[in-house]
Image (cartoon, rainbow, N blue to C red; front, side):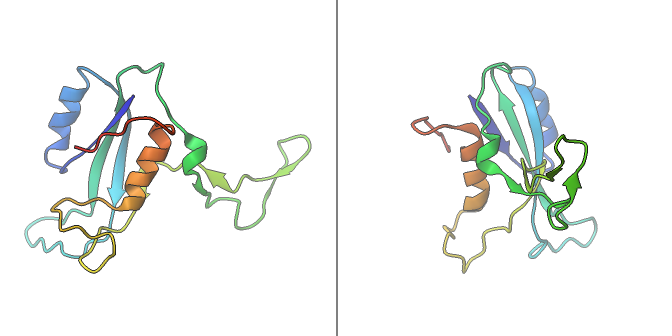
Length: 142
């Protein structure tokens, strides 16, 4: 199976080092969000949260890339043709997301708001669950 750990930018380097002893790190993901509420005055305010995606068995884990496709920005908007293929074909409009994910933070007036100090957006969690599990699998959110 897969495990995702989300933590502060300050703690993540230490967590990363410890997890490497037992797991294979497959991706280091950046959850990028807007800066509303960050009022740093003596340093740069944090506008992201790191996420580690790791697996116990690097040869046997679930990754359903087709379940989480996003719109590709290159080629799809201009209907470009890939002439390297025979016969030439339109560029694929979708791709597996990269490791920088843009999801807004959950705010007080949003329907999904639950008054949790580190609440994650449902769309972010949905992407993780769809990518790393199959119907009937057990998903743990401690």
